Length: 274
Ligand SMILES: Nc1ncnc2c1ncn2[C@@H]1O[C@H](COP(=O)(O)OP(=O)(O)OP(=O)(O)O)[C@@H](O)[C@H]1O
Ligand SMILES: [Mg+2]
Image (cartoon, rainbow, N blue to C red):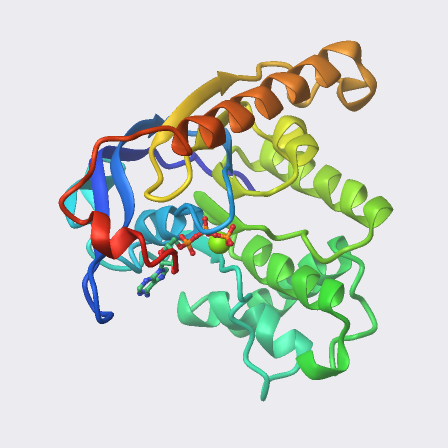
């Protein structure tokens, strides 16, 4: 199974939430192109606007300014070829592990036998075989994350959007699931965008690492990371250097944010610090 990855573009994209008691700007003037088949990691301080950016890419949100395009077309609504692992995982508590894993395929109307086989294969890839009949509440937090990952992998998407998909699994399992993600990405050729708080994870999986400022998110650094996928990458001296570079970019962007920035029209709303 292989896909031609989708191209994802943000063109001067911005997002202001208008539905609360005050306007809240989450993203400002993001211009970035993720090429077909590219793997991009997104890192930035908590609350800066990373999940918002993924939701824009998925079509769950529309930009307040600018454009978000997939394969050159504005993402007006969620597309079937995009798989999103949301931060809250989006599992249905009344469905079993297998039924949850098959959900994305059922929506795409894949024939039932084929869908079940894909879902079972994906569950086994994340180490959840034997739990097909369990319900989400019977799983640990890390197992639930693996189930959400399996559901996305089963979809064989051309654009895989992942919001901190491995944050609740233990360190060793996390590394092995990072390898699963890496292998599948190389095998299938899809485009992926991964939000993570782990600098090491970003450097292990992202051919490019986008560093966001504190809210409202702006793109502070776009760091090339071309050795992703090479043998021994995690243990190399260059890997450690790249981690240091990302760490410095994060620290620099956090430092700038505490400096004297000119006031914005929505500054009062932003001060709410939600
Ligand atoms: N539906 C919404 N309505 C109003 N405000 C929202 C909504 N969703 C997010 N926000 C606000 O937008 C800002 C950015 O949120 P977002 O979830 O994108 O942050 P994040 O970078 O993913 O943070 P974290 O690392 O903690 O997950 C926050 O201040 C949040 O309160
Ligand atoms: Mg988030």
